Amino acid sequence: MKKITFFTYDVYPGGGTERVMIMIANELAKKYSVEIISVLKSSDRPSYQINPNIKIIDLNLKKTEPLILHYPFLSMKIKKLLEQYTTDVFICVGMRYVPISIFMNKSAKYIAWEHYNSFVNKRFSVGDIGRRIASKKADRIVVLSDKDRLNNINLFKTKEDKIVRIYNPSDYKELSDKYDINSKRIVSVGRVVNQKGFDYLLEVARNVLNKHQDWQWDIFGDGKDKEELINKVKEYSLENSVFFKGKVSNMKERYKEYAMYVMTSRYEGFPMVNIEAHSARLPIVSFDCPCGPSEMILDGENGYLVDCFNIEKMSEMINYLIENPEIRQEFSDNTTKDKEKLKMSNIIKEWEKIIE
Image (cartoon, rainbow, N blue to C red; front, side):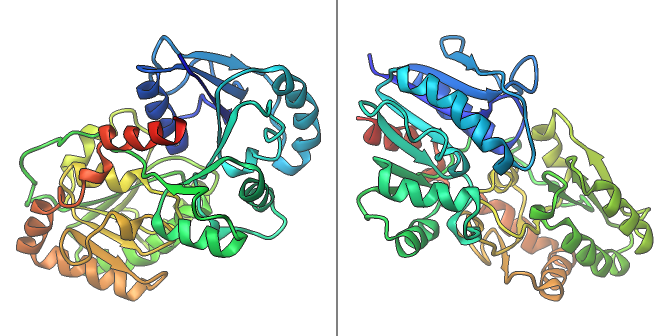
């Protein structure tokens, strides 16, 4: 039986990267021997359920920010472990961790798994260094979208047969057979940090909710920008219509209470929140940011893609959906279109193909 090893910075948080990695690891564990090496141990147990047959190897190293200052220490500690560690396939989860894991035992197949995208690549950043090393040294690179695959080839001169696109899978079954056409609530979900563009969201909310004062907008998630954004809510006099709900454990069940999902991210890898929202039959209005939204949303069929970062256009599209419930219903009916490609069974076949 082949041994598959996932190498991740921290398996314990409840983020999208950890969730997808664990989903894939759990499925592969049905056929292979699977281990997960976690550099950090930020909690007593992972936020997502892990197949009991999967072994977690905790390095228990302490976190230092920024990451670049942590690298010399990490390199020394991890190099010793990996030079003696044996596996058949080594999967590095995230390009920022390629430089500290590329010296893995050369007998193993090395796969670098991108979880953001090369469009937001900053020259000489840790991610940039990781992408450049992977383009030369990795046996395979897995990216999350066709757009990113092409950009990676152009930017780093990666050989076309080395880099493959594998979508993140959907683990959401349809949550409801019925869309709540009477809901007057908008929802957004994500870490409350600059990447997610909640500052743009509040600009849009001011335009939309001043016009439709019987509607409200709920934001789920926590992060370092939350206090600043709450102050902005007060500045815009939106205290009675925009609510930061924090992080919740039952988000799956909550989606069905809403009329639409809105995403204002500056960039993404392959946003799981869009998959979740469509699984709950919600129309989506999203900035067409790099990367992912354009490969999940059928513009004008089950949502709207808006040029980044056109506040006025996004406000217009949301207002249009509010004022035309029949269009919302039509979009809801179309949320299952083009989702076959996200089925776990299809995604795992693609992973097995590069593993074998």
